[in-house]
Image 1 (cartoon, rainbow, N blue to C red):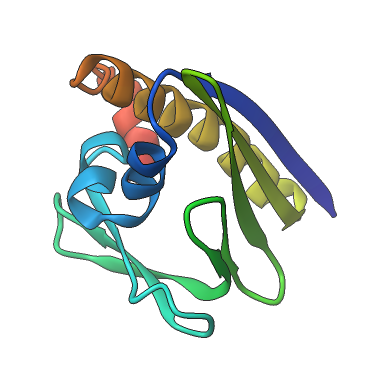
Image 2: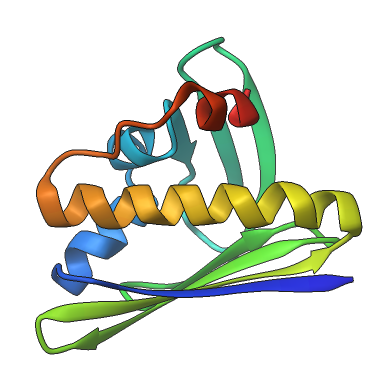
Length: 140
C-alpha cells in the first residue's frame, strides 16, 4: 500500500480554506462539478455527488472532525486527511491519502494534484482553473 502526500500554501484565511473543503457549493467549483456532502460528524457518510450525470459515490465516513484545522474521511482500505495550519497571510494545507493500492494510486495522484491546484486558484482569484477536457474526462 502507498501513501500520497501533498502540501500547498494558499493565500486565504483558515476559515475560507475550511469552508472550501466542507461546503458543497465550494467543492462543486473546484472538484469539476462534484459536490462533497456530509453532516461532518464523526461516523457520518461522505458522499460525492456528480452534477454532470446525477450520480453519486460513497467516499466513506468521517473519521476526524476538528474544525477548522483537521478533517479525515474514508473507508477501512483508504482514507484522506486534510490539515490546515495558518501561517500569517497564508494557510499551509497538507493532504495525506493512505491505503492506496497501485490502481488507486494512479487515479489519486493526478486527481488530487488537479483538485488542489483548482482549490488554490479558486480561493486566491475567485475563479477555478479552466480545466482541459482531458482532465475533466479523467473524473467521469
